[in-house]
Amino acid sequence: MKSFGIIISLLLSLSAYCQLDNFIVNQEGLWSTVDVHCFPNGNNYNTYFIKFEEDTIIDGYTYKEMWRCDEEDLENWSSYGFIRENEDHQVYLKPPDYMEGLIYDFGVSPGDSVEALNVYLNSNDILRFVVTEVDSVLLLDGYRKRITLYEYINEKEEIWIEGVGSYYGILNSCNDAYGAVCGGYDALCYSENGSLVYQNEVYETCYYSVTVGLNPIKKEVDFKVYPNPAKDFITISFQNDGKREIEIWDFLGKKVIENLFFEKNILLNLQEVDNGMYFIKILDNENYYPSYNLIVD
Image (cartoon, one colour):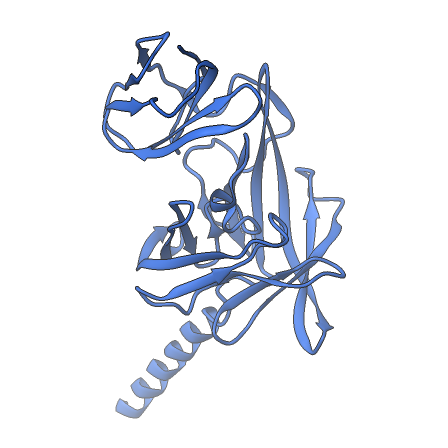
C-alpha cells in the first residue's frame, strides 16, 4: 500500500508538471482583447481573439502560428505571425518576415532584469524592466503565477500572469511603457479547453463589437479641477484615494505632464508649462474620467 501511495503521488506531481509545461504558448488557450480608440465624441471599443496552432520551424526554432479573429462567432481566422516559448519560459513574438522580440520571461526572480522588445508595438526600442515581485493570483481555476515589473525610464509598471499574459492583452506586453497618444488595449478574457479562467472585472463581457460613445463600459466618475484658468499650480480633487495616472496634453497632441498618484487631492505643478489650451486625461482600471479642458495663463 505504501508503494502504491508513492506511485500515485509521483503521478500527481508529473501531472502538475505537465500542466505547467508552457506558461503561455499552448493550443488549448483562447484570448480576447479589447482595442480602445479615442474619438472626439467618445471612445471606440472593439474586440479580437487570439489562438495558437500548428508547429512551424523558422531559423531552427519551433514556433506556433498565431491566428486572429475579430468576430464573436469565431468563424473567420487570419494568420497573425508566430510565437514560441523556450524551456526557460521565455516567450518570443515574431511577425512574418521580421525579427523576433522577447515579450515575456516567466523564469525570472525578484531583482532580475528583463530586456523586452514587442515588435508588434515598437520595432526598435528595447525596454529594460526590473522584476519587483513574483507571487500568485487567484483566477477562476485556482492560483496562477504573477510577475510584477517596473520600467524606470518611462516609470511604468507591467504585470504578467501565467496563461493570461499581460493585463494589456496576450500580444500587448509592454504596451503602457511604449506609450500612446490616446487609447490602448485591455485583456478581456482567457479560457482553456472552453473553460473560462480569467475575465477582466472592469468589463461586462468577453466581446465588444464596434461601440462609440462616452465610455459605455466603465463607470463615469466626477472630479474637480481648480483654479481654471490656472497659473503655477492646479488642484485635482477626487471623491476618494486610488491609483490614477494623470496626463496633460496640448491641442497639438504633445504630452506635457505624466505622473502616477494615489491620493484624492493632488497638487500639480504647472510652472514649466507654457501658456495655452490643454486637456487633462485621467486613467485608472476601474473608472472613466471625461477629458477636461484647462487654460494656463
